[in-house]
Image (cartoon, rainbow, N blue to C red):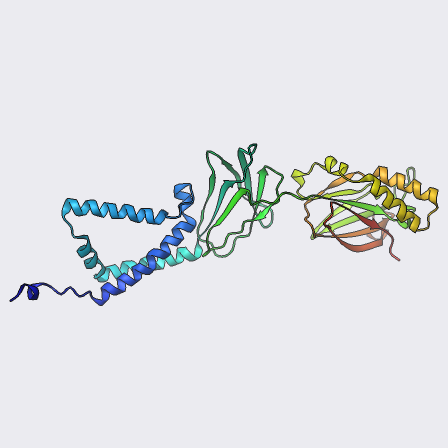
Length: 348
């Protein structure tokens, strides 16, 4: 009998090909999953070839075993892939990995775009309702990366990221979705500069002449209510109203109010009162009163295009029937200009 006939058949079995195909499908998918959610967590840097580095390490270990034990790695691998037990192991691994693939997300922050004075960047992550999800995140030249994988997600997680230092940036969406690539936020580079607007709430002449003056009975007054979504804000003195919009903790209210062009505002007031047929002296007096009385009322976290609803009631007592609507509801939007005027009048 010849030597060729004595050798066992070298033709791979169907089990071998099935296991090989399963391994070829599972390995690259696992590599993508690892790079998306775990490479930064384990290495603390965004490593593109993290999984391939592990593969190289495994090959090195096999080479050492091959040299020490004289093991034929090729033949051992072929025998292992031909075993039905390997099929069961790959099937179990595919099921476990499939569950992890569809329920894993990740959120990482990387220091980028910081100026010379921004040696340390501080962040927090908020849920959609404003409650804290994660606080106390710090990035620095010594620790330029922070974050972690998020396991067992059943759906998208709506999150909003906020810079605490520096605080002159807008919030940004950082929602995390399972079975998708991880979210990478470069801070502060990916946060847009904060935008503030100044809104003057000014009574028209028809309303101005109705407002109580100093010394009038306190029981009767006019109450302005400002509604933003589901929130309402009361406003008592209609002669004094400058509203600042934008991120509240980054707003120097007094400094922003000083940016207002008071001369242009005075000219706008006087022209409006004259157009309403007030005598010249009366128009100048009302302009002087309103122009000097305008002062910052507060800050609302609104962006350009946000909607406001305003209404004014004449209040004569403490009961609901003692409140009569005289203006509104009127809807306005935050404009593109830094300063804008909203006129408060009287309904026909």
